[in-house]
Image (cartoon, rainbow, N blue to C red; front, side, top):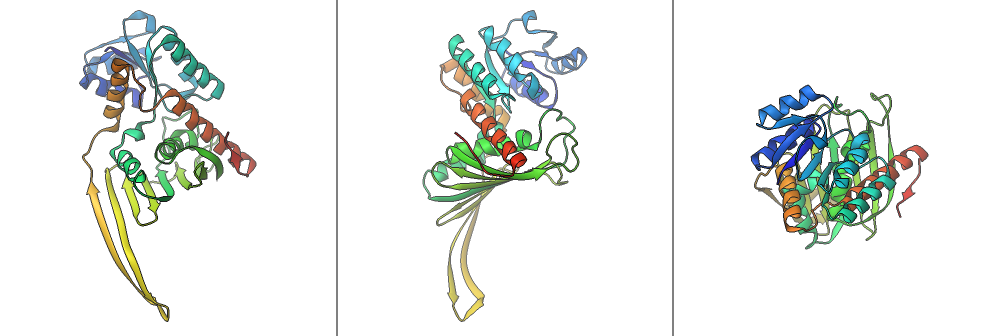
Length: 317
């Protein structure tokens, strides 16, 4: 399988690296041809100025979000498979157009929601199938990224956990968001979002570009357990126990608490994502993250932005 990488920025470079280890890198394209040549030469392939210049079977589109639609339309229209980095597109109608085009052309369309491939998400997905969930919460914060130019923190960072929430819990039907701009002039750089799921459960996401410390964590509260997971270190911690107290002495409450930390087998989510994309193409099956998933995540993120602007809850159809 020959895969072209379109975009030689931070994510494009990483896609090229992993595809090279999978013996699937066909070449690199970027508007900055010198940048493309630098990445291509590192992995022993050629840089190209446009898609018609060489032969390939599939493409990874790792360019600014504003360019996703046109590039994906061109790739899919050529009868090639495509993995489009998140967020899928800015426009919901254009996202649906790409989904329909992929179906018409009989090719695979995947969206790069990389955290679905994190071992802790897989662990919690399986755990939620066995336990009664009450709430799910996430914190995704860090300093301001110089690479972002065309989206705010909700579509850049928050959309990761929006997709994870949908994957673990189910469809989201309502969102209420608060946030704003502190350091970024054009887009929101901090947001807190409360979600209601179709099954009646609740979720909360805190995200910003203002925190000097990079945090990527997920918490799930069950009826009999509390679980915490670290996306970066790839460990989960499960807490369970019972509470004994004297109603005349609530200051000294005895808690019989059992805490178990599980260090999962460390795996690079990007490698798992690209391997899944290649397998979906070869076996003609759906990728783990479909175009429909990418569209749903953008739809929810846009509803959060509308909520932030109007200062009210927004229902999601």
